[in-house]
Length: 118
Image 1 (cartoon, rainbow, N blue to C red):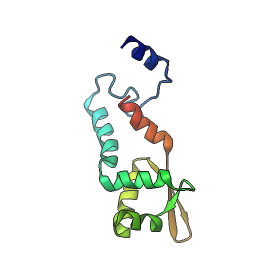
Image 2 (cartoon, rainbow, N blue to C red):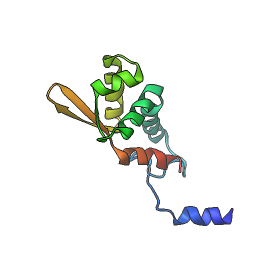
Image 3 (cartoon, rainbow, N blue to C red):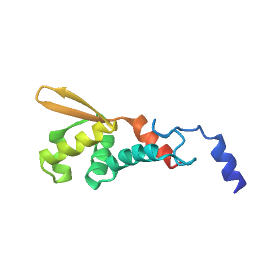
C-alpha cells in the first residue's frame, strides 16, 4: 500500500472544476456542492454520456448534430437539447457553420470531472 501512496504522490496533480479545485479531498460548503452537482448532473444522463463518447471517438474530433441522431436513435430536437446542456456546462464547444452546428469535447473540462474523484 505504501508503494501505491508513493506512486499517487508522484503523479501530476489535477485540479477539479473551478467550483471545487480540490474535488472531494476536503469538506465543501453547500454552494460549492451545488455547483459541482450541477456539473455532474450534466453528464448524469445516458444519452449525454453517449454523446460525449461519440464526439470523443469522432475521426475529426467533432461532429454535426445531424451525424449524432442516428447512432443514438433519438430525434434531432432531443439530441440538440442534450448537446445544449453539455455545452452550457462547458463540456462541449459549438461552432455554427452555415445551417449546421458542429460540436467538440473540451478535454480539459472532462479532466476536471475526473480530478474530482481522483
